[in-house]
Each structure stands twice: as structure tokens, then as C-alpha cells.
Amino acid sequence: MLATFSPHRARLPDGRAVVIRPARPADAAAVQAFVRWLSPLARRRRFLGALRELSPAQLDRLTRVEDPRELTLLALAGDGADATVVAMAQYALDDPSSAEFALVVADAWQGQGLGVRLLERMLARATAAGVRKMGGIVLADNAPMRALARRLGFDSAPDRDPLLVRVEKDLPARAPGAAPLALRVRSLRWWYWLATALLLAAALLGWPAGLPVTMGFVAVQAAHYVAREGALHAFPAQTRVAFLGLLAAGTWPPLAFLHWLQLAGTCASVAFDYCLLARAVSLLPWNRTGPFGLRRAWRTFASPPLRGSALGAVR
Ligand SMILES: CC(C)(COP(=O)(O)OP(=O)(O)OC[C@H]1O[C@@H](n2cnc3c(N)ncnc32)[C@H](O)[C@@H]1OP(=O)(O)O)[C@@H](O)C(=O)NCCC(=O)NCCS
Picture 1 (cartoon, helix red, strand yellow):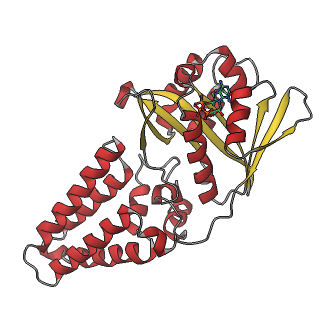
Picture 2 (cartoon, rainbow, N blue to C red):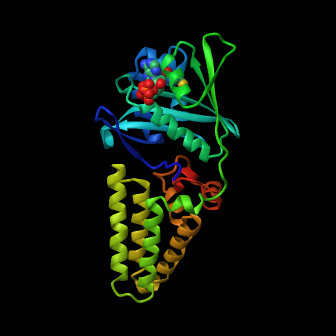
Picture 3 (cartoon, rainbow, N blue to C red):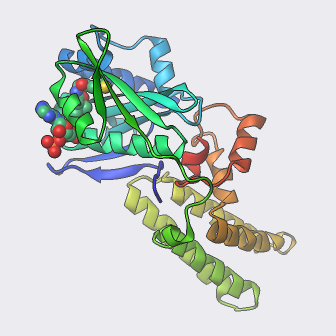
């Protein structure tokens, strides 16, 4: 996968761990606490002025991203209700193909590669969403950000305001459609779905142990994603749990047809990278950032496969 947007766990060189994931409206209080906790210098560099906290409108804009091509990424330390935001990056579209970004890492978390990680993930997501140019305004005396931008291939040019510089980077064009098979076979996800399809096909063709074995295998996948991403609600795990639920429902004879639909869906995922179930799961209230509507549903199911998780394609 070229970009993944379900929670991603990272261990920093000093041993501390963070989870990186898109912001949700429920994060508003944590984001506000993060901004208040920043040093005056970090706040000035991030917001280009004196600011103690975000206005309700700013907070809403950062945590309630409506356009599926825009993004606010958070790095969180700690678990559940105790999790604190330690870094935040976001981009918003200027026009359909160019976007403005900003980034800030809490003072006590700087120098651990978090800035690079966040910006790289953000650029991958923007590229997958079809953004072709990423720009940002940086204080001219902000050496760390200028060095970070240089390291990630941004060009820098003077702004009209001599106190500012503009950093800008062209992003590669996104190849339309699914990633080539040669790329997809390098991901574990592809092998998981292939093996699931084969086991389910064997079950439907009469192998007596086929269904329990398929269910066990899908449960193992869910456990693996929960462990890998350090979150019970890891998106690939949610998809496996939904798959498992359908497998269980299909054991009731009137719903046996569900297993055939699942086989067809799994084959489509393996062959075309189109996963109907993942798209449906992405519409669950805790996975989407805006209200449910026909437009969102249409975009979710009708958009071509993107190189990344279904969540990234449709949020
Ligand atoms: C700029 C900022 C995001 C960097 O985050 P970070 O997590 O500390 O950066 P990283 O650890 O990922 O460092 C990445 C690169 O940035 C540069 N860098 C980071 N801190 C630096 C410093 N104090 N001096 C010089 N270069 C620095 C280096 O090139 C570094 O690469 P290296 O470690 O291989 O030398 C962080 O300092 C910050 O939040 N500053 C305040 C807010 C801000 O300036 N935002 C920019 C507005 S868009």
C-alpha cells in the first residue's frame, strides 16, 4: 500500500510510542489542550502570530474535515481517554489541485523524527487524493522547519512579507485506479484476502472444516491488525470483524447466500482492489468525519480504488 490512513503506531528513537491517525470531531478538546500546552515560540511559528488558544471556528475546521481530500493528522501518546495530542499536521485545499499545509510538534517531542513522519504521511495521502502541489508559509527565522522542508524536497522562495518564506513542493500525479498487481502482491493484506477467498471457496465446495477454518483465519487477521496498530478499532480489524459477522450470519440457512456474496466480494478485492465491505465499514459513524448522506455514500461506493485503505479513499 502506498498510503494507509488507519491508525499507525510508531516507536520513536527515545522509546516513546505514538499513534498517528486522522483527527475526529471528538478530538477537539485534546487539540485545544495541545495548542495551549505548546511553548509561545512553537505557537508563534505554527500560527504565525501571538495566539493562546484556537477559536471554536478554528478548532472545528481542524477536527471536522469535510472534504475527503483534506486532512488533519494527529500523533497521540497514551491510550483511550488519557491519550494526549503531541503533534498535528494538516493540509487544506486552495484549489482542486493545490493545498496549504502546516505542522507542529510539541516541544518535548521534537527532534525524534515525528515532524518528518507526519509530513511524509500527509504528503502520501495528499498524493493519493490527487493533490499536485503542496505549499506552506514559514517564518524566515524558523530554521528547524526550513531544514525539515528542504529535507523532504520542498523549494523555498521569499514571500512578499520579508519575515516569511514560502515552501512548495510538486507532488507526483496519482496513477488512476488500483495499484498494479505486482505492487499489491507485496502487501500482506492482498495475501490475507487471497487465502480467505480460497478457504471460503473450499468451504462452499463442500469441505466440512472449511467454514470454521475460514472464521478462525479471519479472527487471526483481526488480532494481528489490532496488535500491529495498537488499537482495538484499527480499520483493517474492523473490516475483519464485519467479515466474521457476515460469515456467522450466513450459517443460518436462509442467509447462506451471504457466503457466496462474501466470496464474490473477496475475489473482487483480490483482483481489482475494490473492497465493498471496507467501503461500507468506512461509513460507520466512528470512521467518517462528516454526516452521512447520499453524496457521501455515492462517493464511497463509486469512487475507483485508491492506493491506500478504503478509509483513506472515502473519508
Ligand atoms: C519544525 C518542527 C515541526 C520539526 O519537528 P520535529 O519532530 O522536531 O522534526 P524531526 O525530528 O522530524 O526532524 C526532521 C528534520 O528537521 C530538521 N530539524 C528539526 N529540528 C531542527 C533544529 N532544531 N534545527 C535545525 N534543523 C532541525 C532537520 O533537518 C531534521 O532532520 P535530521 O534530524 O535528520 O537532521 C518542530 O520544530 C515544530 O513543531 N516547530 C514549531 C512549529 C513550526 O515551526 N511549524 C512550522 C509551520 S508550517
